[in-house]
Amino acid sequence: MEDCKKCREPLEKIQVRLNTMLLKLELKQHSSAEQVFFDNQEFIQLMNISKQTAQAWRDSGMIAFSQVGSKIYYRLPDIMQMLEKYHKPSKS
Image (cartoon, rainbow, N blue to C red; front, side):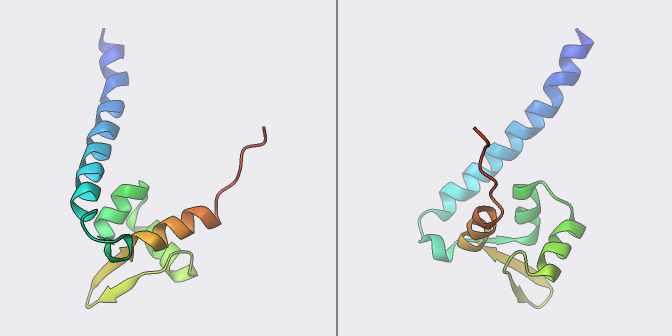
């Protein structure tokens, strides 16, 4: 029984993250996709990466971003463009 609980915990965390991101996206959908921005923390959560990875992606030019003072923002179309650029089709 304890093993099943250990298996469910990671899935529950993923579900919470997905639900949070879906709510944020729904709120942001009232504006055009061009106007949807994610701050660095939202981007990190969305992509499930570390702050260091996000920094490395910015430094290498892998992802476009805007910086206002010390805050970093990513446009939704730039995130989608990055994912498309690095998309690897299945071999089937």
